[in-house]
Length: 639
Image 1 (tube, rainbow, N blue to C red):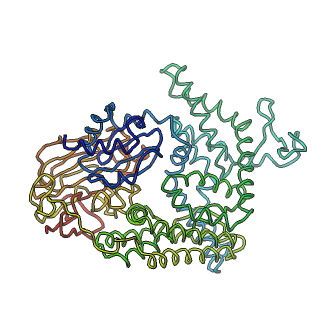
Image 2 (image 1 turned 135 degrees about the vertical axis):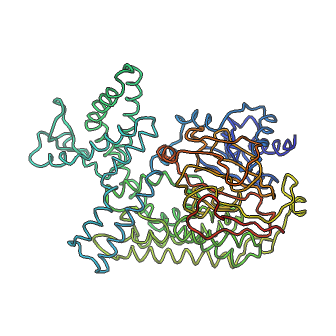
Image 3 (image 1 turned 180 degrees about the vertical axis):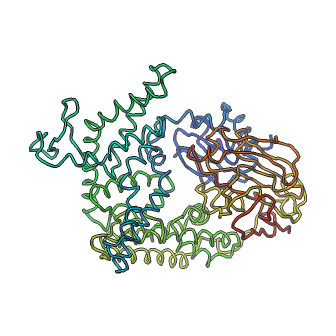
């Protein structure tokens, strides 16, 4: 067994086979479900020859291997005595066991892009007004404001879709539940004298203006709300599932949604909505009370640990709190204090770029710095600062200092907007313009960047990190790939028709950081993957979402269609080749349904990477923005 020792080392350092609930693999990584992740020796695994990196995400302990992961997986299964299963089976088996963080992430992730976009529009509208470029009474202002408010005002409709989908219900039923909550006529019924008042003399005192079948209804304002629709969607999904088991198949199509809505919506207005709203108010007051104990300490804590939260996915727990604060109080200081963290990160990256003599680090630093300016810090974290350790700690210090400044200035966000520099307009108070809080955000951002940059320059990257490091394998030194094929310079052609983007923009850090290989990403506009070279199919995952190729000249290429598409279990993918098959450049390899994949909630952004790039002297990427199959995409030059 070629990988027996590696498998033994991995099993030992994940805490032993008794610490493993399950292990599966996709095209690039082993995906462990561990009983206790604290028992895993992550540093030891990362330093193993044959391991690219380790990623903890979505409740999985992912050991990134590369193209030969099927062989390593087989060895791990044999060594550990585990049951062999597919990644998709494992994902489906655990859908109902998702953690709170995973649930929140699944609900909010699909709409973050639009939420950021509408927030940016609203923020720039506020900026233009503060600078005197627009009048609030102008038509331009009103239309821009309508765009900016569109998603946030009707938030329950969007969250109804994503939440009920996460809970296993029908998305359009979730949208109907959300739309009921923001039905405009109901807001007009609160004028005039109430019929009665419930809970008089308490903090929950509520006037009643209407009844439902004689039961008093407490009308609340659900526009922009978060908690009520999520709880209603959870309840609705349970009701729908029960109805599907009791209603005959012949009438399910219309009777299931009929009774689901008829049961869920009234109960939401009568019980779920009021209780959830009161919970939201109390949650908002509690967070603001904690913040007001010492805004500087709160800012220091959130700013300093924000990047740690991001690594472990804990930041998702703060997102609904922040949105709830925006709904209840019109502003939020919780997310407002993390603004300097990303700038401290890119300050440290710039320091690494100037300090190191290692060419690989210099090459990775430039795109990581650029993406970090716009708030995408995963390439910087996973590709540079976290592996070096000291720059990551320094960036946390910079984020803490920036957060303390934001706390001191009482900086708050007044809308959810863009990341990085696009987040600046979110600190503009629509009622007060350029306040101290706004200037505090600017100062905190600049100081965090300077602290990260200067400390990295002063304290370096750790012993031995400033000098170049070369650790070529015997095969690499001889100019051969892992299969023993002598490497030659060659051109790798585009396998798709579509738009070319940077790997650093991908949401999967193993690809975006360059840990798995160098290359580009393509947003396909046509669901056909053609062979970019002549060679053999070295890997084809059973779900047909990813393929590995070895060219006749030795290049090892991985094409991974979409992000996390292994979870589709082969749906929407059709392969026209098999593993080990000989292929010619331009040959159709895989067909896939773009609309179906995106409709299921997955991105089709596809990395095309050269996994043995370190065995070449140089790798050049074409600068064209749109390509078609057969266009020059990547050129590798042999040593």
